Image (cartoon, rainbow, N blue to C red; front, side, top):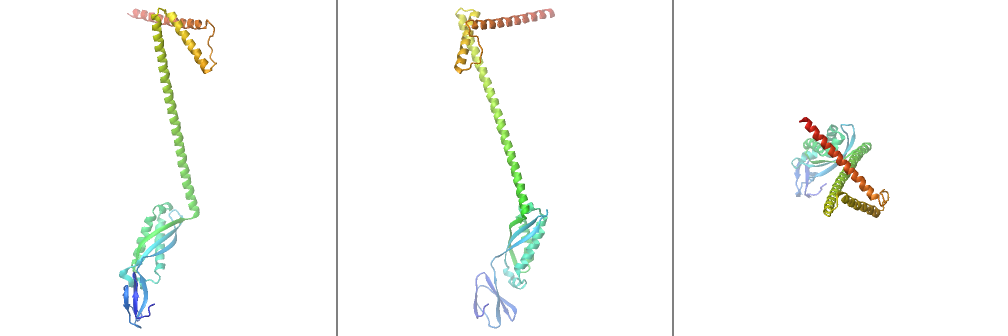
Length: 295
């Protein structure tokens, strides 16, 4: 309370003067004088932005109780300082009542998941509702924030379990997809390996055939008949095969090792070739006779 004749008003503050118990005037920041006995300073009103914090419980659309921490930033309307001081005895208590009413009108429209997703929308709706109510009393609502939403512990545990189950399912799907990719990649690699091995074997056989053909022609030029050339080639292949198995240490192959062994092999191969030639020749003769009969 100011008892002297001269007094000062600080920045962002105004002073309300009453004369004979009735509102007289408002003094702005600076140095002022008053008439003793007649004028009385009844209040200093701050024009700064103030904040009130509330904890309000409400039920969501899916019957989940949620504790909402709400922060309201407010201040006195400079154009209505008289109303702000005289209309409300306890503006913070009145503000809390309006916030509670607005919160309990907004949250029950949403499920618990929607409340978390649309927290800012709920805060804006609450800010709009309480601004309309408090403005008639000379108070401005600067901003309303919902800083925390805290459902019941059992609900939080259930939500965490659901989230964990979803993550486990996603992890299992990713692992299964990784296994599938690994199996497919391995199968493709094996298929390509088999294909390349087949190509290599075909090229190897082709090279062998070409080499034998060249050797056959060279030996033929030297004056050997077909049976002699075949004997030489078979003997050469026979010795190469024995050398390869001797180098590899593999003893599970059965080949004739007598002096007449290579001759027996040569005789069997020649007989097979001659038999094949006879069958082909007979088939061609029968086809020619059938063609002549039709003519």
